[in-house]
Length: 128
Image 1 (cartoon, rainbow, N blue to C red):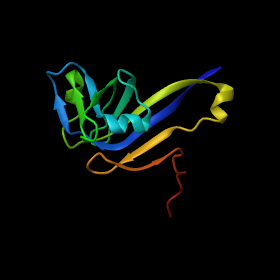
Image 2: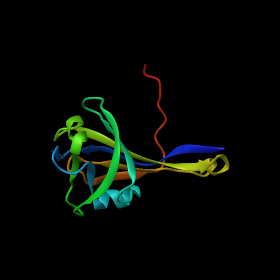
Image 3: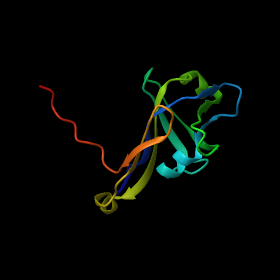
């Protein structure tokens, strides 16, 4: 059996550009792409924290260390500069491979610089 698993995510990156007239895609700072193991032209899912929009597109490189996160083409209607996004990529694994799998989680600061990385999402706890 194959399972689709989270491969990596960029958590709380800030949209810097939104260009309706640019050929569709999402431009991501190459440093962030490398940290999350996202390849150019790889399919990504984008989840907008500000407005709840969710869409799929593909990644393209933006200048290394530029902090650019640009949502382009028709997707530009789903994210505006200043919006916080989660960008995720997925992979297909055999059921046996899932036991050893650990995603790459990259957490960004307000300037889209790497604040920290992890391979495990913290467990959610009950509130008092």
